[in-house]
Image 1 (cartoon, helix red, strand yellow):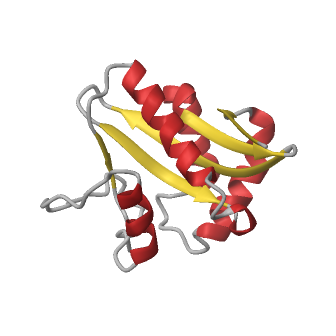
Image 2 (cartoon, rainbow, N blue to C red):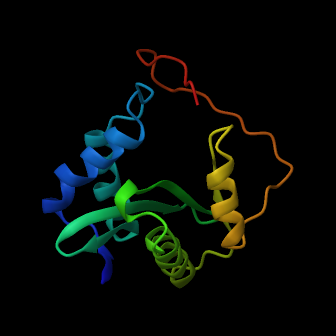
Image 3 (cartoon, rainbow, N blue to C red):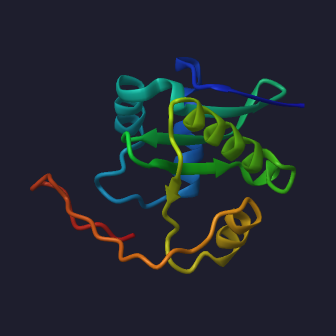
Length: 146
């Protein structure tokens, strides 16, 4: 049985391990431990995990800036994929965002991952005609690769 719940400090090592496996060469500005610390300081209630038999099977970060909601860092361990874990995590994130007044959710997908595009389309998301732009604010960070 999948239990969807908020992140707890004891989940830290499991989440970092999942992120390291999912994104083995992250950009310098995507340090898992730092991302967790920032999320917990900012909006801990939008850090959601899926637990199966006491094991962290997946997680997602959601955010809300008062105008739009965002879905970030969705990951499900390979052995737990195709059982609805990702769908449950997204639905929980959407529900939590809706409860705080969010009317629209955005997300970004790295180019070339068609399977994840199909996953999000199955949940009602659509590709929108937008140009994505970014800027690093740290002079010590390298330019993003994705």
